[in-house]
Image (cartoon, rainbow, N blue to C red; front, side, top):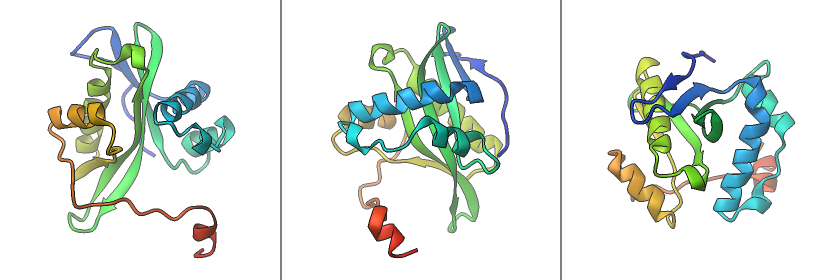
Length: 170
C-alpha cells in the first residue's frame, strides 16, 4: 500500500500530531481497539490479537493502514482504513473502519484532525469518496460527523456474513 508523509502537526492545536502507524505501534493500536470495543459495549466481540493485526497492517500483503493521533507525545487515538471501490464513480474510495480517541482527550480537535488527514489522503490518492459507519445510538459521534459535513445515509443498512454463515458460502 502507498505510504504517506510522516506525521504532521495539526493546524487546530500544535499539541496534536497525526502520523502513519509503524510496526512499533501495533500493541498500542490493539489496546485502543480494545478500548473502542469497551466504549461500544462490545468487548466480547474482540477475538483478534496483536499478531494478526501486525500481519494485516505490515505483512507481505497489507490489508489496511492506520493513522496514529498523538497529543503532547502520547498516543491517544487511531484511525484504521482501507480501500474500497465505487462502481458508480469508477473510482477507489477510502473506508474508515474505526476512528477512536480516548475519552479524556475528546473535544480537543483530535478526531477532526484524523478525519481531515484521511480526507487529504483520499484526495491525494484520487479517491472519489470516503465512507464509514456509525452506530445509531452514538449521538455524540453522529453530531460530530454532521458538523464536519458528513451525510448520514438513512436508507442504507450494513450487511455482513461472518462465522458459519461466511464459511458455508465460501
